[in-house]
Length: 119
Figure (tube, rainbow, N blue to C red):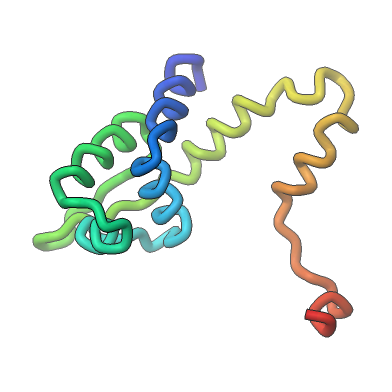
């Protein structure tokens, strides 16, 4: 991923409605959401939603697939991964312990049986 693609991706997410759209799509991965459902959930007019989704699509963060009369939008998690890896690539500067807390936060884990019984 090059600087221009990263800047485009970050700029696309640097707006409240677009960030909300992207988060909603990430939360509904891998199935995605129809445009009308996104508009309903976020209380965004359809034409406004369309403009925001276009920005996210140009940044490569969202993909749309036409199904009959509706479009199903999905977050491009590979692009999100590439964006995050670009930002974190030089994080530790040769000292992995500097980024260890961040990596631990990003690493999904299943709760231990003991944690499950206390939940």
